[in-house]
Length: 227
Image (cartoon, rainbow, N blue to C red; front, side, top):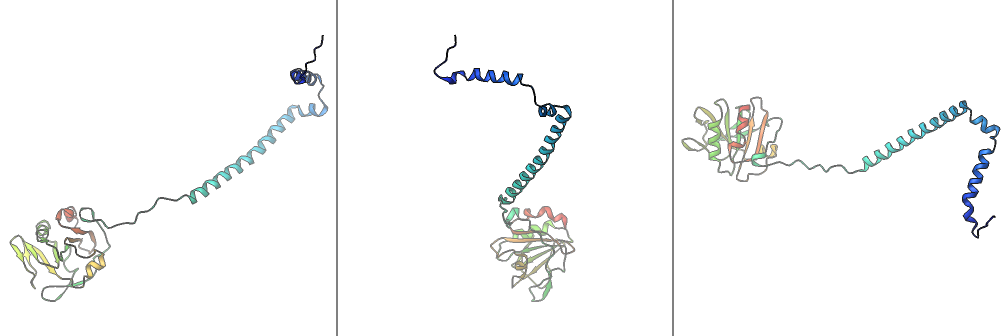
């Protein structure tokens, strides 16, 4: 007895089963038999690989190009401008001591590069007697201490600037003046602010350390051995 349902979609499974049986029993065509040969299967594999390789190369090239565009357009890190630090952290270097002539107490021009190696202390407007005295105590006898501006203090007390080169404990101390502020200008040390500026200059005139703001020898004491 054959029952025909009201909804013909319920027969879809049976229809597919019948179609599968018909395909299985259908004899292959001449082209299908030719295509199923081992040689033709190998040709199809080679053709498939030949197509995939260029596609892969093109895809990699596109990815590299897109990555390069993103890298060039991506903002990099913001570079902070170099700033001159103060007191205990300042260690500014320059190539050589300027060939300047400053003025001694007698009004005579004196070459700043005459007595090297040297520690040059710019003490205009600075109560830096203790700093100068500590520097004189700390340097070796062959190192000149040059105080630019003001007065100097040795271990015996305050010594006013004179035409002669003062001596303290067998060490050379020179007092000079820089009316035009040329030394500060050329080394970009800024205006006096109540602290001293210290320059450590080697025998060949190289500035090995610059402290733009200091009130204690401890900021540059470790570098005295390099003079």
